[in-house]
Length: 256
Length: 84
Image (cartoon, rainbow over the protein chains, first blue to last red):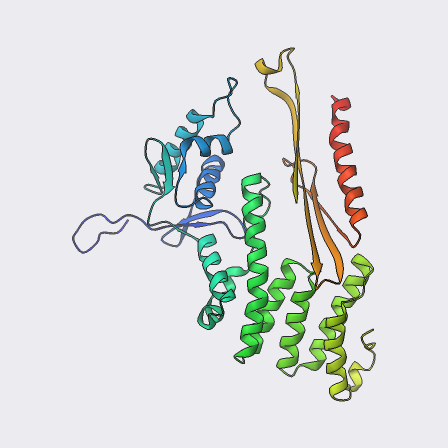
């Protein structure tokens, strides 16, 4: 904890990470908390700005034998959480929320994705790394899966948009990286492969583009027994037609 | 599409008064999309026991295949009733 210029004790700055896995950090260091407290913190992170105690208890704990939400379990979790991470949760009589100084990577990632989709070049240059991971992989509760799928769709679209924007401003290497992140998230997504191949072609890496195309075509054949779509085949066919293929590429079959 | 399955068997005569003696919950996640309007694609993630957390992932180009996976998952869950 740090003192501010007036000598008052400043509140610690907490960071909740949900992308790629759960972690609570302060001053750059991870903080260990229990699994139950972690679930509560993740739940509050995904439900800004505040939730009722009743909603949190009913979602996170099964009802008691008489059908009422597990208010006691929630009270215990809040107490333990604020003991381990002082001030991370603000609790009133009927509501809970993350304290104002708590940052969450999911909020930063969502903000970055929306700015990228709006064509913000500065965000595109700086924030693609925030779109690298899924939200809480391996957590299967319904309140996580719904938000996780929403985040996943947003980041896939944003990564492809980032690749296109980066090509447009001549940052081809970063465009390739963004497209590869989209492909890693969903290897069978054709629009992600198209973004990658367009970035390679824009950079003048025709051989790399054809190699990427061939890899995707083979994956698609093995996984689904399908060829690439006509638009992607036409893109690669046009690239092939532009100039003679180098000898090393002669073995690559033409697009169907 | 996300489906949750939950199975619990009770040890006492009155389920309201007992804790589950054996509980299993699973999840089936179907991600399906149309790529540039050209073809149906789906990735199905199946977790039969969330405690173990082992994922089985399959990919499909035919909606009927996805239906078959869904039916098999539901049959497996329903079959737990006879395994207590």
